[in-house]
Length: 140
Image (cartoon, rainbow, N blue to C red; front, side, top):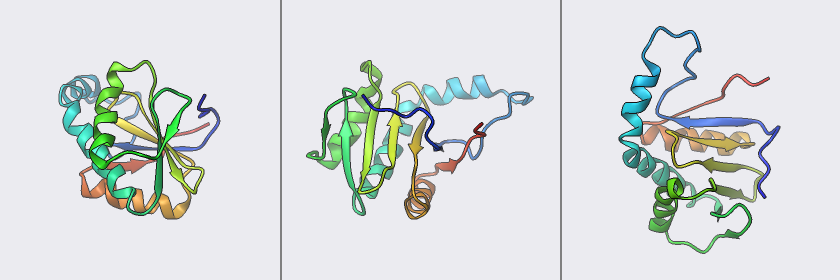
C-alpha cells in the first residue's frame, strides 16, 4: 500500500493558493462548477504528467499495490479519467526521486509529495503552461 502520511506535499491546482476557511467568496459554488468540468482539468493533469515523462521515468499504480512503467502517453490520460470509477487513487511515482503524485477522481487538484527543488520547478513550469498553479498548503 502507498504511504503518504507525514510526507511534505504540494498541490497542482486550478487555483493559485489555498482558499482561507473564512473567505467571503463562493468557494463551494465555484468548486461545484469546476467539478462539472473535471474532464477538462484531468486532461491538463495528463498533459503535465506526459510532458514530465520526457524528463523522468514514471511508474503508475492503479490498485494501491502494483506499479508499471509500461504505458503509452494516451493511457496516462485514460488512467486519470478512470480514477473516479476506482476505489483507489491513482499514484504516479517519479523516478529516480522519492516524489509521488496522487489523484482521486473527484478532486480538482493533484497532490505532489516530496519533490526535490529541480522537479518542483519543472512541475511549476509544466503546470503554468496548462493554466494550473503549484502551491504548498499550510502544513502543521
